[in-house]
View 1 (cartoon, rainbow, N blue to C red):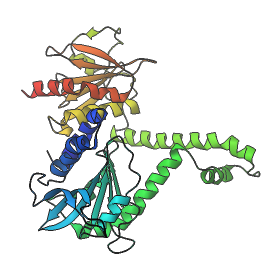
View 2: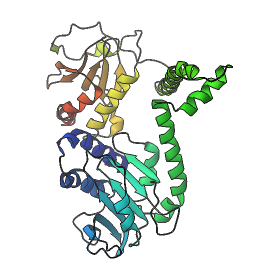
View 3: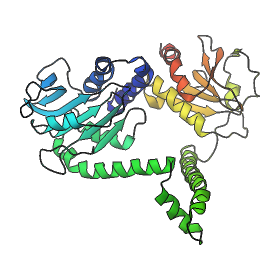
Amino acid sequence: MDFTERLNALALKVQNQKHAIKTEEATKTAFIMPFISSVLGYDVFDPMEVVPEFTADVGTKRGEKIDYAILRDGEVQLLIECKLSSLKIEHASQLYRYFSVTNARIAVLTNGEAYHFYTDLDAPNRMDSRPFLVLDLADLDESLVPELRKLTKEDFDLDSIVSAAEELKYVGAIKRAIAEEFKAPSPEWVKYFTSKVYDGSFTQRVREQFYPLVQKALKQFLSDQVNDRLKTALGAGAYGEAQAAAPETVTSAPASEADLNRDTEIETTLEELEGYQIVKAIACSEVKPQRIAHRDAKSYFAILLDDNNRKPIARLHFNGKSQKYIGLFDADKNETRHPISALDDIYSFASIIRDRVRAYEA
């Protein structure tokens, strides 16, 4: 697997296993050591590369330990402090103390799912209070992948990442601030947008009236932008495929070629594409992600290996008004529908999805 695939595979592992992690040590073993070894490429069992429980004496305090130090040519380059996976990353005070007594230019605070990267932009040899890069495995930002690659053993480029850190720091912070505004507009945003469309005084009553309107407009704007991108990606048209809506029985007939070649009025939804991305993330542990394709139909959304309708991996039955189903296939290509209440439920069928892909490969 290449770098991005390894990162996606770890992200999938974290989502599948984080509910079972109850201690900080389990977080290190299950998530953080694989991040250091599989993603960054350092040998966690080689003390010349990775030192666990690294001693960092701070002032009068002796024997202070930091969870991991990553070395290159005998010099400490990265410090990693770990938290329990269920804890939110908030304070880096302990890491801040360690930073000034080592040669490291990069410090990382992580709970195994979110990774906050710090350096010393504001004052030499003093760790900044804000991270310059925030990597969230639950919601990977592809624009950060090239920067993260610069910290790998193979492509380590400290000068490049530090020189880019200031822009990363503020662009990332602005993006997160915008995301918060889209979720819950601040009074300043409500007032700003209201002033663009309303000529009266901005009273408390007007604020209360326009708050839900601004919030709704922001969400619709974001949805419209996403839909425009999806239409472009889909070639501004729907894939030909249809089948009369099947009764909601437990087992349905095998996939047929005719199912996937009928011209109908089909609308691909964002939810279907999000479900496809989850199935794709699961399947890419077995094959290259570009081999996982999709075709939409009137009654279901098909996910295929090699865009071959004789190699169905799953079907998403999301067109019903209430219950949603994921359809999975046995060795004879008989489909069994499983009810799901949320997209994340798809992860619970990861082993079945992988088995089906492996069977086609065999």
